[in-house]
Length: 430
Image 1 (cartoon, rainbow, N blue to C red):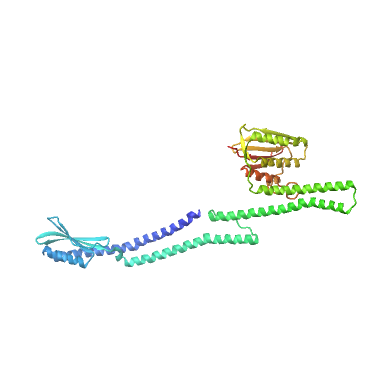
Image 2 (cartoon, rainbow, N blue to C red; image 1 turned 60 degrees about the vertical axis):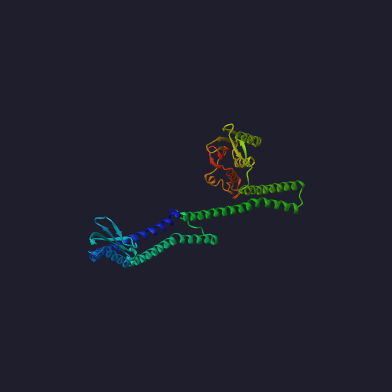
C-alpha cells in the first residue's frame, strides 16, 4: 500500500480505537451509573411533589405562590407549573433552566377553593453527576491515546525510519566501499526509492565499466599505430636509408598517423553525439531522403563492386522531420560495418522505406554473414566490437542509436537468415 494511504489509515485507526474504547466505557459503566442517578432523582421528584402539595393544599393561592417561589429560590434545579383544572390557565414560577434531563411529578391541590394541577420539574446536571466516571473516562482516554501513539510510533520507526537509516548506510557503504545495495521487495514509495538506488548503482557500475573500456580502447587502438610511428621515426633518424626506404617509412608513418586521427575522430564524434546538442530539424519527404542516399552511395558502392538498391514503399507525400546530416551519418556507420566485416564476394546492400503506425521504417540490410547471438546482445553498446584485433572499441552503432533516439525514433538489429539488417523508425512529420 502507498505511504499516502498508510499513514492516514494509521491515524484513523488511532481515532477509531479511541472512539471504540469510549463507547465501550459508556455502555459498560457510564450509562448504568447515569441510569442509577436518574432513578434516584425520579423518586426524589415524586417525594418532593407530594410534600410540597401537602404544604400548599387547602391554602390560598397567594400563600402557595410565595411558598413555591421560595422553594425555587432554594433549589435552582426545581421549578413548578400550576394549571387550573377548570380554567386551563397555566401559571409559571420563575426558574433558571439548568441541566438537560427533566424529572416530573404531578399532584392535585386546592387553592382558594379552586382545583389546580401542580407539576414539579427537576433539572439534572448530567456532567456534574458524572464526577467520578468522568475522571475515570479521562484517565482511560489518556491511557488509550498514549498507548495508541506509542504503537503507531513503534510501527513508523520499524517500517519507515529503520529502512531509511538502512538505505542511508547502504549509500555510505556504496560511496566509500563500493558495496552494491540489495534490491528491495517493498511495494510502496520507500521500496521504489530503494529500487531506484539499486538500479542507479547498477547503471553507475555499467558506466564505470564503459569508462574502463574506453580507457582500454584508447590505450590499445592508439598504442599500436603510435608504436609503429615511433619505430619508423627512430629508423629515419638513426640510419642512413635510401630515398625509396625513406619514402616507404614516411608513407607508413603518415598512414599510422591517419589511423590515430580516425580513432580520435571516432571518440570525438561519440562524445559529441552523447551530449544534448540541438538538432537542425527540417521536414523532408521520404522520397527525397531516399534519392539523396541513392545519389550519395551509388557511385561509392559501384567503385567497391558492391550492389546497392533502394525501395521506397511510402506514399508520395510521406515526410519525416530530421537532421539530414546526422541521419546520413547513421547509414554511413551501418553500411561501413557491412563493408568492413564482409568476407564474401557479391555483397549487396539494400535500403527499404515503408510507413507504419509509429512512423516511417527504414531498413538497411545486407546479404553478409550476419552477427552471432552473443554479439547481437551487445551490438549497440559503446566500445563493443566483434573485431578481436581491437579489444573493446567500436562506436559506430552506438552513435547511430544516440542519433536516432535524439530524433524520437527507435533502432534495432537482427539477422534475417540471408544477412544482417538494422531497422530505424522515425516519427512522421505532421
